[in-house]
Length: 107
Length: 227
Image (cartoon, rainbow over the protein chains, first blue to last red):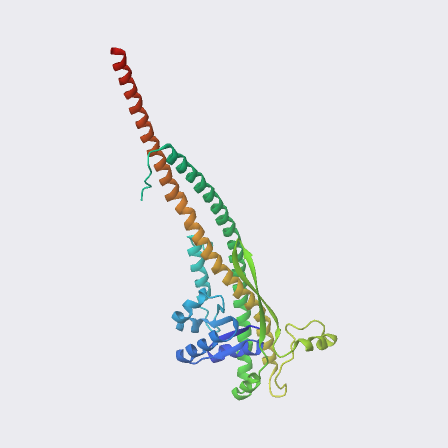
């Protein structure tokens, strides 16, 4: 059965480990890439990536968005949410609809 | 690119058939696009709500967690969390939205056979299987803040699973909408006008030939009458 993987800084992923995800703590980009390879080879349905890590691994994560498995989801950061996940969503909506309908009522 | 066609009646009928076909396809694709859009918008709004809720709850969880970290020594915390608790397993199924295959996921339980424990727990605490999983670390050395933080993280996981497959659905639908939209536009702004242009030019050529024919006949008649 597939599982959930969490990739991020040590302090950010520990909590998820206890909640039933498989944690991959990474302290530097190289370690993170190595973990990513391991995750891709394992049976994971969902890959949760912290915002900070998603920014570092932007290029590496790019091809994953079109793969059936794992589904990459970007977690809001513990300290200062930067809205990377929302931004990604907004881009997709904009590409599909041809206009930014998601946030137009806000600004 | 212009469509080249011979100026014959057969060609004209063929072109007209192609226009009818293109218009039918255009109508169908437009309906598909509109329906996809409706589905898309409702899912986008859902995911947005979900993400906002998630951000709030995640913040709360991180807060509890850092509280626990402040109270406990790093080594004890590490020790408590290093115990393999068994990972949640996910069941993936697929659903069709307008011919787009989208995933759906669900947490089905832990890999280490905890499923059996749920029944035992129920007679004591009722339905607490979601947030009330017994911690798998020692209670003596850890504080209640840690229990609190972990309970919060556990409550978040189903939300995350849901958000994950919804976002993937958005991505897939977005691709489909984009390609459908392109096809609708190509039919509407390129193929159909070109076909209409071709029909017009063939009709004009045919009329021209017809006129030529008539004037020739009149000429011949005149010659015949003069004799």
